[in-house]
Figure 1 (tube, one colour):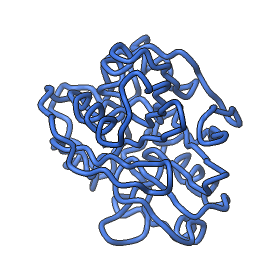
Figure 2 (figure 1 turned 135 degrees about the horizontal axis):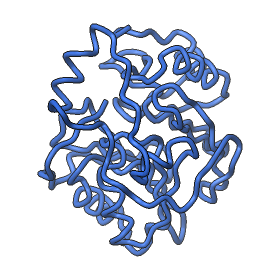
Figure 3 (figure 1 turned 120 degrees about the vertical axis):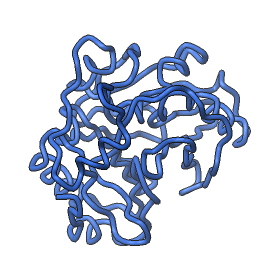
Length: 251
């Protein structure tokens, strides 16, 4: 889910440790449904997964402080896809901290602003929700941000003892997931969403819904205990079964 709004966010609503070392930040002040960013804390550095919406920089910096870390420790920002509600504060944070910015190779030109990002192909159920979150004439694309490293399937990122990049196109052409095998954790970006009090669902608002479904089914093959989403609450338990049974309520 995405939009393009003026900066107006300040206080962090909620920070929860999902598993030791991984903190979920629930970002406030946005029409995007239960928008999340994540902090991974290594001994001497921090990794941010997704960077919130326009103006969310202060919330993320506040979250760093609340977990006892400094902006100087933010070593990398990993963007799961190019939409503004996940890249909105990336350029601001990268400039303020010197962090390396990482994105999927196919989405990197959209993150940099070199090309216009493709819009989602909306279902009838999605259209009014998208129009509510995205004012007329605005793009779902975030402000341009440098990308220091483009990643592809199987690449390894040096945090959490080794994070494996998964190419999961469909929501956007270059959407990526992150597998933390030592912690048995999966971060899905917007390919999957947490539903209100229920099992995970297809994220929706996709450029290619069938590819998104194939990506979701591929994620369902991973043996993990926790799934973390771009929107909605993390899922703890039998992730494979939950993803195999995921539905598409907006399809």
